[in-house]
Length: 198
Image 1 (cartoon, rainbow, N blue to C red):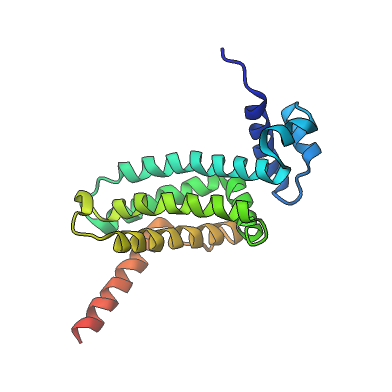
Image 2 (tube, rainbow, N blue to C red):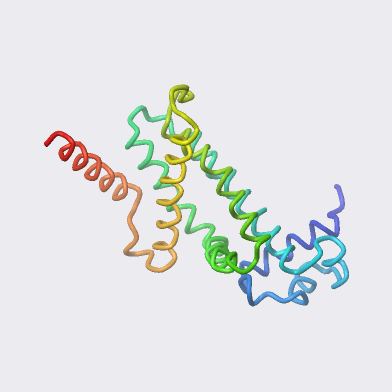
């Protein structure tokens, strides 16, 4: 068995603290206690407590992203709305399992305004997520779709996911299910088509 490095222990301890205490309430001493390391190791490996917390949060989001990729790959239904409903249903289920991550993530979004390194890391995560989400909607490689359109499609789906996350955190009972989101989108698309035909 490969021994866990100091750096890995710090990341694991920081993640536990993020989930239990949140970004702003976690101290360097909390991380040291959770990781079984020492204060100096935070500076040595990450430069600051904030850099360590940011790295732990990004790592957690990337691991969740692997789960999202699995959901996207499993979306084999030929009908787009059925695929979206399936994706959103799986994501809603995932929010229940990963609630501490999303609480920490929402807190980090607010802090990003004052922590440029955190904002940059989160922006990079979003930049990586957009094409994967767009590919879920634009099938068969989307050779005829330009990069700007692909980015817009991914951004639209990301906006829905982020909004769904906030609703799930604030009022899970009132937040829409995957089926309800798909039905709403069907109605919106129908209204747009009716308006265009009028």
